Length: 262
Ligand code: OOG
Ligand code: MG
Image (cartoon, rainbow, N blue to C red):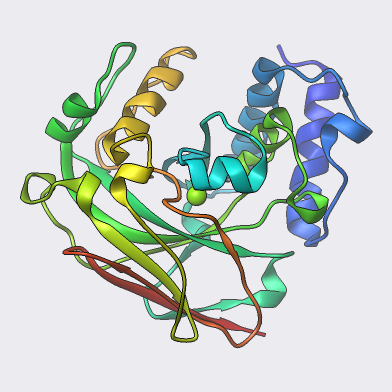
């Protein structure tokens, strides 16, 4: 059973998201000695609140899976969170800036899972064998914390900064690619801001999904058939502004775009 203080952490972060305002990190305001286990408990409560409101999980997601992200955020251990249906934006669609706090965008490779994947002991090769399709994606992260300033524990409790996702429309069989060699560019208003390759994500993006399966196994859960899972940003995240046009191009996987409205 989660203690009152863990429930308080979940309430604090849900309120920040709903009220679209940044808050000080939990390890500063509520519980300086928050453990990883407690942080995931707070995340679970936050996820359950969204489910109770009628939102549906699209899939878990991985974060902090590349050196670019570790260097940018100062946190170098992979984490997971959950993407919900209300977070989806159509490819080519508009992100209303006023819905969020201080959004940033990331280029990612997503996996549409064809068969349940149950850890522990899962490898990237096993993930690929159970992946129906891979697709390109842009994730919009929006940490509820002031200036994206957080520790490993804080960001876990905050559902790994998850906020919005734009999936590409092209589905490809993973066997058609060497995913570690898939190059990607992230452009804003026609200018390339970041670039990378699949290998930036733990050597191969399927490894990130394997880590996820193995982490979920600790709480007796598995990756489920039909989930669409982000494997984590290939590059640093880029801050968004009203009027921006964002394009992520992935070699062989296609392009994903959106614009930022008011
Ligand atoms: C945490 C979320 C990181 C990724 O792809 O690495 C993430 C953050 O940087 O705010 O989604
Ligand atoms: Mg991400």
